Length: 171
Image (cartoon, rainbow, N blue to C red; front, side, top):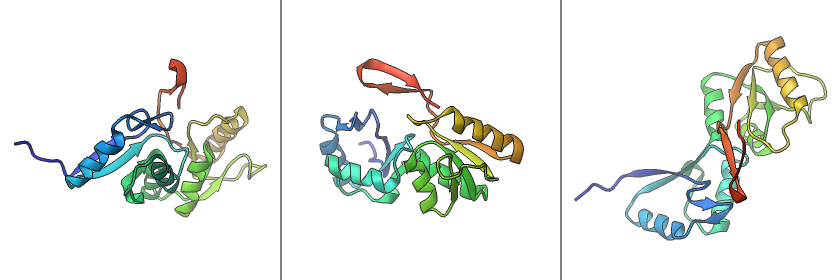
């Protein structure tokens, strides 16, 4: 008889759901695993939402019983990386969800919308975003060049699958 794992790490986008629709059998399968005593941790390299926003989305789709500690996004990984490296002041090129996750963990967050003039920062954090502009990228480059800010990638993904089999560039 094989041993039942104590914990499973499960990707969400394209695995548990596709385009925000649960994959057939996913809800039932996860419930069955829970009944076996397996802890389920949902992982994603998508930082468009905070962990709390992901929890609300899981509930809305019918996935129940998850807590914040059961969600590990690339935004939260960025939080842990910045904390580990004692970085507190960042410029973000990317999703509002990423900025919110950073603010909720006590980081001073700057971006092109809130700061008309460049502010010295310790790191430039970049993620995939549908609204990423050349102005944001230029500001980030100048903060790295002029202030020695570190460059942190928050959602590494070579491409992003869209409906209809279309792939767009990732980060």
